[in-house]
Length: 150
Image (cartoon, rainbow, N blue to C red; front, side, top):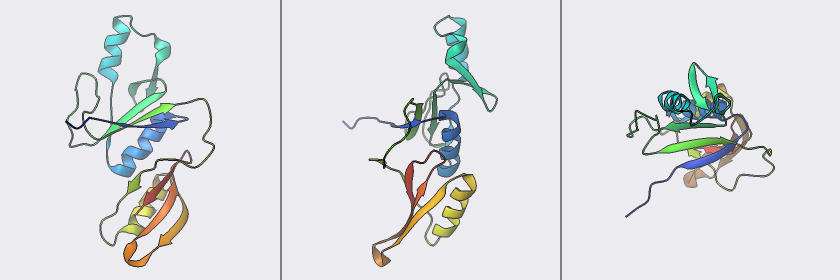
């Protein structure tokens, strides 16, 4: 039986990076407000474990996004399918990513995709045009993580 998984990405400001990737992939930012309220009321976490972002409570240092068509737990807001989790770390990014995301455009829509991603805060780094083998841009998200737009 295949295993479930999520991709965890180190970040400096998890909720802000989650906003970028949710917009880039047309995913939904998970809303753990109901779970956080329950945990606070039961005394399982303190107020220092929580932060406010875009009018919702979120766990300090973490934010998730999920595919809008996949199932999720309404009590926790956590997705049960295609999901990215952003987790704050103390050390800054120092080298090239060993894993990266490829964002695919509709046929003939690469320039529109790259322009839209730039509007969200991404930066173009280098273009590759390998003819029939592919055409893509290496880009950076707002925290400097490499990804490809193809």
